[in-house]
Image (tube, rainbow, N blue to C red; front, side):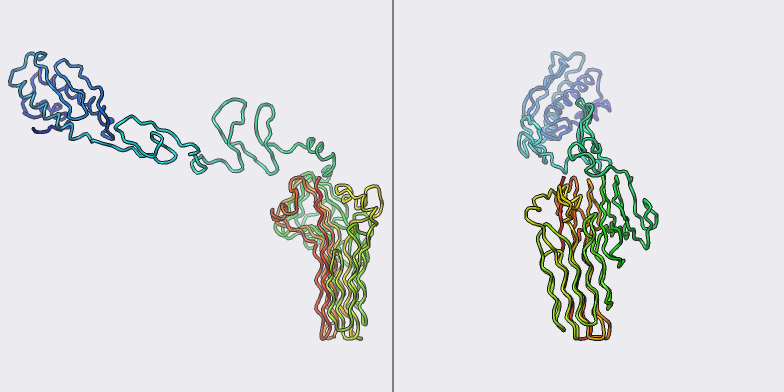
Length: 525
């Protein structure tokens, strides 16, 4: 039996001829073929999903024309003519039409695939699996936990996805527009907001971070800020600061002391504190310091430095060089952290001792004829006095709670190098001071410092000992959110309280010893 493609049938009908015999259609046969064309469309849709994209079982195909019947079957569709319903058409035309319909049934079967498999790509599933045959009804679904982060929509930077209003709605980005904001529901709405100062004061005590009366200074290295005039990108801040935010630009140094011991040889100094209700930003290589000065070369005078706590006189500075024996480093005042014995001076032509402990200066190296000077020492408070310490109060005042004795003092000075009988050894480094910083937040890649100064060399061409390094000082840091030094360091800020390095000797003279490190106290609210 010949087959008749349904597409050919449709084309022939449009051309007005019978699809197989090619006879011109009469009014009667044209009506039949138009009915067949409609029935075919219904049958193909039921069998193959409309476009032939799948397969299935034909369960209900009917013709509205009484002249036709179409059998429901999963194999060859059977389309027959009901002769008794046909009027006004010659018998020969009916016979031709019947053979045409048989050919058409075979043609339909040739165009309909026997099977089709539907495949699903995660997170979609079909009939609870990865694939299924279309010979039966199938159900689409999404796998449990199938929507991964990669399939979720992108969001705006520094935002949460949710509904900020007080009614069910499509999700949207809820933005944190600036640093140091937190999510808060207020007035029935959810959003990000700055931490309310009133609430913060309740939690930590009013004025704990100061009152911001100095505003938000920016130390840029060229502009006079709060009356402090910069010199070569350095500011000397000679009073306590109470700011909101504070920024130190890259390459700029802010010394918090009555004098700048890192560059001046002006005797003992007093440290200064800085309080901030907002953020301290240390941009680039910015430095906030209270450091000891490096020793001077081959000068017999003492090298001053060594600030202590915030309203107390500093300890003696590192000793200067001498023609014979080197001078001893200056001692620091009392510390609750225990007594530290000075590093002993050494004989002529002997290398200086490195300080062991905290806050101690290294001893000077021996020269051709003179011994190196000893590093400075620290004194200890009594055990009973130590019980009066409370970080948040004592470290802010520099004295024990209920007392007047300063305890958070700087390091001790490094010993001077010995001379060779005619030439001076190098001076010891000055001790580090106390740097006190209390801010709600600290950020940046700069540094906060209280380090000892390096020792210096003796007279060139001589046989002189090098000066010992000064002892490191004390860093006292308090923040609201960075609750450990490791968190602060991970953010990029450097905390430096190291002892200074001993200097090399000249000729046959020996090197001075290194100062010991100071101490870091992270005092949380």
